[in-house]
Amino acid sequence: QVPLIESGGGLVQAGGSLRLSCAASGRTGRVYAMGWFRQAPGKEREFVAAITWSGGRTYVVDSVKGRFTISIDNAKDTVYLQMNSLKSEDTAVYYCAATRSVGMLKLRVSAMDYWGQGTQVTVST
Image (cartoon, rainbow, N blue to C red; front, side, top):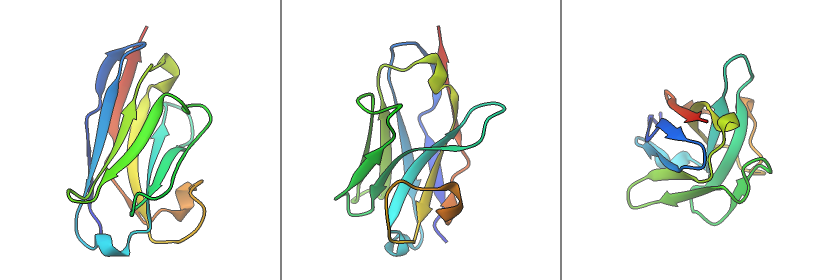
């Protein structure tokens, strides 16, 4: 098992910034990549960004490219999602997830092996 604990969500005005953290524990040696997903009310969970556990490769979706940055601190087993220039459409519950499967970083919900509990991000206008 790889327990994941997210933190850093909250309420922010449009144009503001937040940094989400995801602390991993347990058998992290089995993890190939970490991803951030989000789910807005009434919508399906969608992929946002991913990073290999080594930190060597990253991927972010076009809708957040240039605004969101994913990074990892292997000394702390923690993944971060820096979110800048936030928009109202970024409002969602953000989930951290881990996969053991080696492959492309455009991750799918079904490919993830472990999930965090989620953290709410609300962007006000």
